[in-house]
Image 1: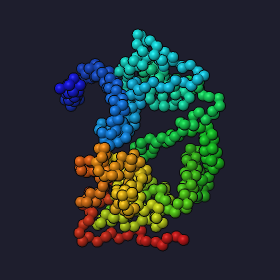
Image 2 (image 1 turned 90 degrees about the vertical axis):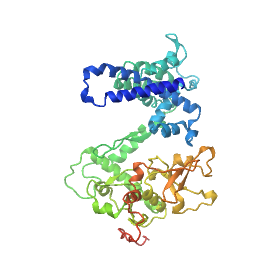
Image 3 (image 1 turned 45 degrees about the vertical axis):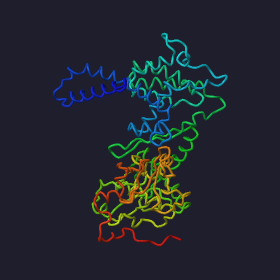
Image 4 (image 1 turned 120 degrees about the vertical axis):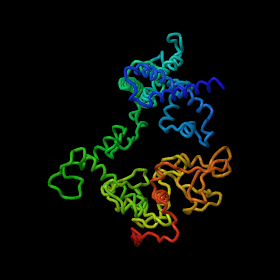
Length: 481
């Protein structure tokens, strides 16, 4: 057994013993264990250093190829079970600790904020980067994630400040609380951005624009954070303020408007978005924005808590559907037959440009690649047998793959370079990922299992011999002129 294997086995055995000790917390007292647990927490900080070092190995040796992927994070997600965000954080720390030196600042640039930390000058007898590595072994993964998030706010012109700020931040992290560390690093980043903001570039922060959405809260709401320039903010503010006073942006006449100012602004923003969507519908001849899949059982057993899956990966209650104005010009309702598992009827009929995507929603709900949770609204339609090899553009030969896994797919279907491909299982009709050895793996995520087809299959209601088809919820209508 190698030294590393022996260390890992000892570490694993120790964790098992710890789990046994804490199996019944009622037998323990805080005073008896707190000292040991504090030591355990301090020792666990070194795990973040090991994680970054291993991520460096994955980047250096292109570990993505081991799972048929392209990048190191593909391996970290597939084999270590990490989220995409955590994989990127580890790789980012690896670059700061072990990666190549960043390019020097542009000629004529101001000197760095922390020259000793940024260079290779001596600090307690050690080069600056080696000192940062040592400090990182005393810093928890939580604090290192905070440092990484704040460093992402450096503008392009201040990017050469990253090594110095990173080294100083690791030193500060050993004594500061997470909240205090966040503010400390943020101040350093702000100083660097202000110092290196070129006078001839008023949009130095433009590359930081973006939208971030939080996970759903217990009350069914999400928070959206928008990063934008002053120019963008001025335009958005003008549009919202133009029609967000009392009694505005509502269809019904009301002498009393009880909405709060923030609610009126939201309603105005929503009206702007829906007007854009209506115009897009007319231009694209029925490109759906939201597709809801249902069965007759869903309708029969639904109450106000029932949630319906959509192509966006977001499940909506009946109240959400009413607020969205379901059945208007922007949305589709797809009915799945309990007897055959095929689409039966749709709430709208102008479907030429979205029909196959709607089928993908009904059958998959998410990307077909095993383990993927990307909703079908973010996927691309993929030919199972590629178009160049004679594959046809019809429903049996189509499936939905996210952009990442679309690149992973081996169109040659020959297992070359260890790459897998998607194919339809002849026994179940499901699309799965076929490995080079011929084994097939299906997507068993919750996103797939909430699709209408999967729910019918799980209930044993697909392909029941002699069972008549369901009646149509939405009878065929003549296409509008």
